[in-house]
Length: 347
Image 1 (spheres, rainbow, N blue to C red):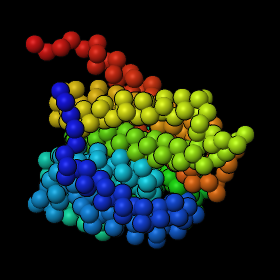
Image 2 (cartoon, helix red, strand yellow):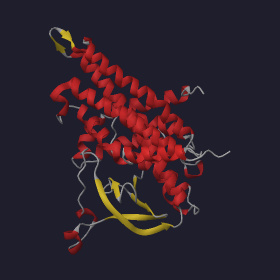
Image 3 (cartoon, one colour):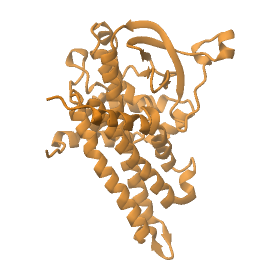
Image 4 (cartoon, rainbow, N blue to C red):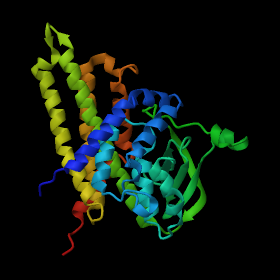
């Protein structure tokens, strides 16, 4: 099967990239890491105005009712820009989860605002995330999905805070390798739906797909930055990009990214098939490995400056390191792939 993005999808990606570039995303990411989310929220509202947050939302909830492939295209660009905030949860996971509930009331309640960018949401799954939610301090909607139950969540106070006034603002974040990814322990508070494990499983898998797309985009950005630097940095009177060892490293990164891309879009095409779990796991393993290779090559080519917070490269390196395990470790996903391959095919 020959697969290629349509002209409309390519044009959409180009326009979205222009908006993200104009929004000075590195500055927004650094501000988000310091607790100032104003620039990041402004950027995400601009992204929402392009329809990204409503891509897989039905028209009855003011969405675009687009395809998972369209969603993957958008998430690649958000990953390429290292956009801050719970974009996976708000653009993919929560819309998929709410629309698969037997009761339409939660979707009617939250999806129009989510699709329009007026509401940011985050979600925690019982496993493998273990009750941890991204940006629960700034999200307007926190959901907890565990054991077939979906509930509105609240941040869990620590031991000291439980004995005092455990207010929402007192609960501190969990340390993350990416300073812009603020993680919080959350627990179920108000029940939304029971017996919805199928919806939870689907929402988790579309989150895995979205994470794979972000990793692919981040890997592309790392390769672009490293290639540009290799053309500018000189040693022994020559640009380091002319040295065979550097060329080989960058070529290996490009090959890894190009080989991962078809797995991403296959997973987007098979979300409604029996191969969903296998394909999204294959996509995130391939995209994660390719992005990690891009990170290592970027660090080696840039040298010590690549480690510094002042260098923009570090924003993508830390994001890749965090995203590789944010939706399950490589071992978790390889185990899912192995289990799927051992299962006899249905005749």
